[in-house]
Every structure is written in structure tokens, then in C-alpha cells.
Image 1 (cartoon, rainbow, N blue to C red):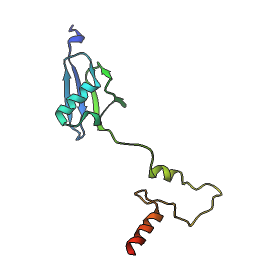
Image 2 (cartoon, rainbow, N blue to C red; image 1 turned 30 degrees about the vertical axis):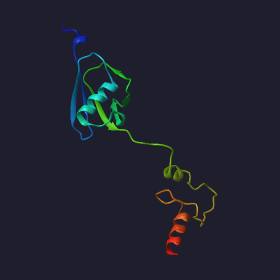
Image 3 (cartoon, one colour; image 1 turned 90 degrees about the horizontal axis):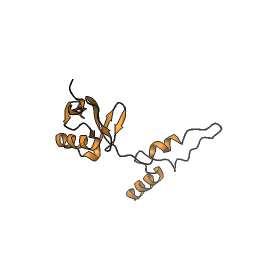
Image 4 (spheres, rainbow, N blue to C red; image 1 turned 90 degrees about the vertical axis):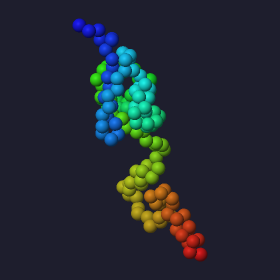
Length: 127
């Protein structure tokens, strides 16, 4: 029977366009950073933007993978941060007993500018 430690590692990576590529490593263990570097060589997507998902879990750069024939999905990382308009909208839910208002000076438009400021700016333009 062949020795398992001599067998090269083989990974299948599904790229952003849906195509799959096969990555082969001669060592018995590959780290996430090595896999990302190989993907960069083929796709030119920078390693810091790559996220590898396998089995519902993200593979970090320090993750050591020794299981061959693993399938991974390549996705791009998205910039996030503190909530914006969405978190404001969640907090505006009408509570029981709260009266309706007709003062919309504190409301915001889709670019998160206050409506009052937008109206003031359009008034200055017309002046």
C-alpha cells in the first residue's frame, strides 16, 4: 500500500466566474496563505481581497490544511463597518403609544444627508 505522506495535496477552487481550478502541492500540508498565493498567480486577485470558504467555514491565512481533494469557494471580502442608514431605519420602528409626527427635518435621504440640509442647499442654489 502506498504511503499517504508522499501523496501530493490536491485542492479544487471554484473561482468567481464559476470555473474550477485544481491546485496541487507537493508538501503534505498547505497553509491558507500558500493557497491564496497560488490563486493570485492564476487570477491576479490580490491575496488580501480573497476569502476562501470550505464547508461553510472561512480558511484564514494561518490555517493548515492536510486533507486532499478539498473543495473551496473563492469569494471577495467586502468592506464593512459601523452601521449607516440601515441601522437608523431599524431604530425608527413605531412603538405602541407613540404619536405620528409631521416634522421631517431629522429624516435622511438615501445618501444619508439630512433632508433639511438638502432643502437648504437647493434654496441657496435658487437664490
